Image (cartoon, rainbow, N blue to C red; front, side):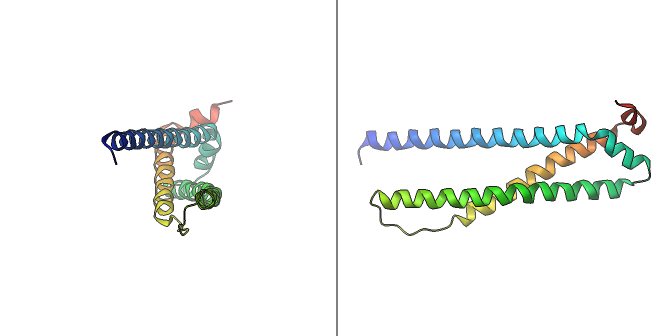
Amino acid sequence: MTFIGKITIIIINIFTYVFVIMIGLTAIANVFNTISTNINLRRRELSMLKSIGMGDKSFRKMMNFEAVFYSIKSLFYSIIFSIIVSILIYRGLVFSGLEIDYILPYKSLIIGILFVFIIIFLSMKYSIKKIESENIVDNLKLI
């Protein structure tokens, strides 16, 4: 391979990685914003639960279960979609003349699953701390 060909491949790799990182950061910001907004909109409801006797431990447990359900729901759709896309890419490569075997990208799927759980739990923790620091009576007065 020539020098110009190697440089071209390096430049394409750099642009690809930067593009993937930017999409990932945008997705993280969207998830964080969605969960924070959801919790903010439910401040009155959550304050009402706390005012009738729900303890901090029960509140955190409820919010953690909610985070798990958000994660499972999002992963259910995204894993199915990603497997279908990987199969379509494989078929496209085979159709173009490459003789390769299909290998499920399970390592990438596992990394994605871990990141989804981490991102959702971190954004949920942030929202929980924000709600716990506010006054219950003030939240109940909101119209």
